[in-house]
Image (cartoon, rainbow, N blue to C red; front, side, top):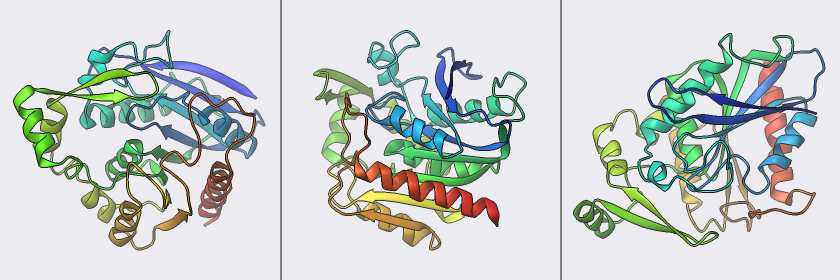
Length: 285
């Protein structure tokens, strides 16, 4: 198993995008899965490293990102040490981070050997808010061949109740508790303004309806954060979506952080198998 840690330089801000890449060297070109974490997430959360190992064993290059403003830092990849960056994050920044990460793969800076990587088989996978991001990015970038979502958000503009929005506007900031760390994490109102000011770029319904790439969407029936109806909405907007509803699974599909077991939850085993089949079968067409 080869693992490489990299830092990608943004073209629009001064925050680094940290990433890691895992694969098994075979001297044969392999498809790549670029994975995007969700809100209050990071690339080394819970089971994500185990998941990366399994995808590598299945013949993929698996690349995970820490989006630039997720609150972590290159020297503390699993801690929210930069809450100011977290509070100033928005969807436009994250989409730009994704573009810079994809551009990196196509650049001379890419450390993956050319005989190992098939750039014609680049696939995006995202969890939760990251699932919404990969749906938006797929519309923007035809270098992306297939998309996989895990408990994806279906609409950014309808995420917050009006009372929350009114208070947010009045105070300029809302605080979200991180129950794992007990941190009060700021979200400045600029996040909502970003949605209001970029209605075309940040409309997930519109993006999904225009998507040309094949889509595989996973969602749990007991998702306590983003209800399973969101997955059915995505299916309505893109009728050829392969929808996988996992019974009795929550928003993180039975995982947690830290994850100290050597075995993945059953839901992730299903996700890996179905995703492997999805990408490989699509590649054969």
